[in-house]
Each structure stands twice: as structure tokens, then as C-alpha cells.
Image (tube, rainbow, N blue to C red; front, side, top):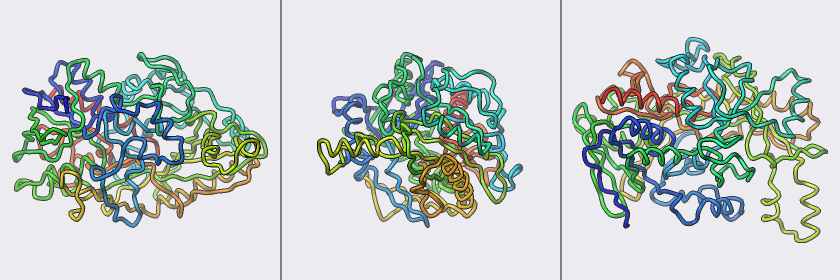
Length: 530
């Protein structure tokens, strides 16, 4: 209550959302001398009790669910899920300074060249209005900003122009086991680009092996967007936490102010330019909540595309046990992957990547805390079962579908009395066929390894990767897209969207590096427009 959350006078730019996109935009614009204010619905977790170490301890206790660790739930985070496929939105949701990067996995790949031209190269989906070369310099800039650790050893990836800022993490012990099986099957493995420090970088610690990467990295080795929120603040930006933007006030072609609610009252933040960076669910929700006589179907929605084409990546996986140590859970993130089958995609089967797990099976702490045994019996049980699991995962592309969307549920309201988001998720047969194909490859690897396969996450047991994409899609035609290739809304002169919500298609790699690259592109465009 003692924090000043009042509006900033004479603001050049108002950024809504302090996740990776919003924080990068704010940092770059503040560095250019712009008066920037950032509004975020959540708190500053570094000022919270418990701190990150205590949150890590909560995360490994069976009595805490993943949302509990980052205070997700209640009226503020209420939602509906009415699609053919249930969407558990709050499982991987964080509202706060840093956004979803507070609990993300930290893998940062570039989209492949064909991902930008799905309709032309694969015969399905749509083409982006920009191509890989347009985004290539921003990818390199984003890798430097996040401090990516990696190696140029992916023979299937898009061309690069410079080395990664940090060296790649070495292959794990279990990577060596997988490598023997993959060599027999002629499957190429390569390193995973990670947004975590393999050595000291930008004043942050190298990874020290806590192993709790999701949902908490207590050391700060894994990048999160509070890094750039703090940097923006040091450059003169104002970061306002616990500021839920309920509506964007506007005329026919410009946003005038963001109306927001805080613990001590309601305010209006005026600015010359607005950047929406609240993610693939809350960004379309805010636009839909900001309807008016000018935009009866939602702000910036003359196309009717706001909220439409909601996409996510689907998980495919298989796992089991070996009759030998695998040292699983010694490393809390992926160090090896394969994109070998990625560009085989066509109309029938989509792109997918393979991930070689370093953390299959329960950790010894999780086993011990959830066990009914004690003393020597517990020790014997841990010695028999720990570190023998093995698994191969993967991400699969979902095509954009008009009947997969984020809308409003007028029958349920949040803490401000506004309709909650309704995630109406539909998947499509191509994605399910792709999962089947990925499962075939995964089982081949495990069988070659000599593993006893105990589970398969196939088409009937898949789930989302919580990568929200497509709901304010980019395009050149205002009749079927929300933003133009510069990510400025077609309908509003002073509004840009920096988010995976602008992705026309999703590919099959983790989206955060592309989010960061687009955010840096947006910062350039907003600065030039001002």
C-alpha cells in the first residue's frame, strides 16, 4: 500500500506486461531516452515473502502444486476452457515482473526457415508476412540479450551469423547412452540452446545445478525477464506492479489511456504509444474487453481475428527404465535434442523435434517426501529406483484453426468484475498424426537402448506445452489479421503488439527466442515512430 502506483505524466510509451517481450521493449526504449511506463498485473516476486529459495523448497514438496509456487489462482486468475480439448491454463501461468520466464524451461531455438512459409513449403497453414532473413539479426540480438549458451552444431537448423554468447552445456551422462542408440539408428543428436549461463554472464551466476529449473531457478543463472525490467528501471523507466489493466480507452484510430486497478485505487495511464505484451491469452482478452461504439467486437478487431487461431505445441513422449544407472535428475534441463525430422513436414505430418530427457522419473527428494517408508527401507527403495529412468520427449506443431480461440466467458468474472478468458482449444488431425510419428521414433530409440518402455504420451494422452500463440496474428491484409509486418495494429496508429500472439503459425520449437526477437523489432519500430 505504500508503493506509488500512480500514472506517469508525459509518458512516451506505455507497455502492458513485464514478461520477456514487455521488459525487452521497455529496456530498449528507455535506453533511447523515451519516458516509459510498464504496467503488470502481478507483483515483484523479489520483494515477496517467501523468496526464491523458499519457493524452490515449496516446489519439491508434494503438498504444493506448481501454480501455488508462484501464487497463481483465485478470482484474479479465473478462466474457462470450453473447447473439445480441455486447456488447464493455470498450470503454467505466472503474473508478475518477469512473467512466464520466472518458471519456464529456458530452451531458446530459432524457428526454421520453412516455419515462416508453411503454406508455400508444406501446403498447409499460412505464410508469415516476414521471412527468416527479416528476423535473423534480431535473433542474434535476442541471444545476446538473454545470454544464450549454445553451439553451432545443429545441421538441420537455420543459418547463423555469429557464435552464441556462451558455450553450450556439455552432454549429460544419459545423453551418452542415447547417443549410442541414435548412432545405430542414424539419428543425429546436437546441443540445445539454453537461456541459462554456462559461465558468468551479464553479472549473473553460471548454473550451479540446483536442478529445480521448473518452476524455480534460485541462482539467477536461468534468464528471466526481471533482468530487463530492472535494467529498464535503471535507465529511467517506471515499472508498476499489481496494476491490472482492465480497459484501453480509445478513439477511432488511437489509444488514449490504459485504465488500471491497483491495491490502492484505479488510475488512467496516458501515453503517445502503447505496446501490448501480455501474452497470447491476456492480450486478446484485453482487446475484447475494450469494445466500444467504434469497435463493437473488440478493440483492433475490425478483422474479427482477435482471439482466433489459438495454437500451442503438443507433447509427444515415451519413457521407461534401464537395468543400469542413467543418472537422471542430475541435470534439470535438456542438453541434447534432434531436429532431424523437423523439415520432413508436409500436408499430412507436421514438424517435430526430439528432446532427450535429463530428468525422467522422480527425484530422490520427491521420492523421499512422498514415501511411506522410513530409515533403511526408504534408503533401499531409493537405491533400487533412483536414476534408472530414461525418456524421450518432443514438441509437435498445431496448425492455426478458426475454431481454436480465446474468447470471453460472460458468465464468470475476475476480481475486477470483468469476464474471464475462455480458452476454446481444438487441435486437429495433422497434429495427432505427427504425435504418432514422433512416438514411433521415440520407441525405436528406447528399444535400441534396451529400455523397458513403461509409458507413452501419444495422441490420446498428449497435452499442451503452454506456448500460447496466434491470437492477434500478423499479416498484410487487414481483413484477416490484427497486426501488420511491423507488429502495429491495422486499426490503431499508436498500438503495437509484442507477443507470440502475433505468430501466424507456431512451428515446433519453443517460442521465447522468437518472442524476444520480435520484441526487439517492435522497440525499433516504436522508437522510429516516436
